[in-house]
Length: 380
Image (tube, rainbow, N blue to C red; front, side, top):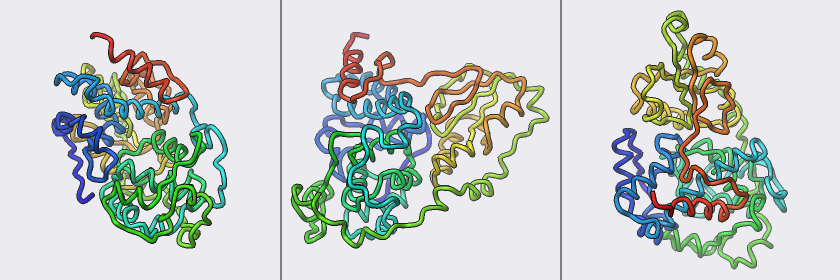
């Protein structure tokens, strides 16, 4: 995909929304060079919400009819989050049924090294490492290759991808991997070489994916994909963060007397318009326990910090724990925004803005979307 630019400032992000062509998106989004929005890092990090995106397009006079496919994809993002809210930590395991025909636990070394032999996939992995982004269709191709061709369980490969994604949303990531692997869907998702060539503009032939959809499930895993990588350090070690962010210390001596309100931001809430009416100290908490459970790369963490500090005035950064914040600010009313990754005991817990706030949770996406759409078509 070449170089992908993710601007940091809020006005540039809003301009990216304004540049969306919903019709072009609907026709081309599955192609590597299609009209995707590149909004996912900002939605995932809570700088903007799905509701903000929809409302801004609506205010331009675009009807739901003319942008329905795009809005439906926004609803998918909310749906994954609603599933996380509903199921909690259960999304870390096979959700609907055990993944079938698992032979390996881990991720092929060839995938980590971008040497699978499938040209489009190898390039997408290299782009992921350099940019922190991967096209959604390529994410499905990678997951299918790992889970269904290499017959690996989905969990550690999902952690590997999440580790590198600027838009890393554990619900969307984990549940999409499970959808491909068949543990959160009715069947596995397969992609053959012809399909990959078509959407990725490649012309490769003779690969181990150059087969019919009927033949692919019966194939043995190719030898290229049978050696597993060791991701232990990447997925378990936060010492690099401790060293890099050791300067983010709380100056509790002054805080105890002067701070009456504390707004705690997280990697999933960097909303510059949140609680601006408050005269509050504003802190981005890099929770060590969270980072051990959902490890991310230094590139991702730097992006989160820069995104927050570019849009939220005087945003302090703290690497530690919520309990330490409470001790450092004993007289402050603490405000947070709800997110299923965190269960902080704050004084005020604000809801997020959803595409359709009143839409009830449903177990299937299309039932959920039906409820969303019913709300969206109501006259405002």
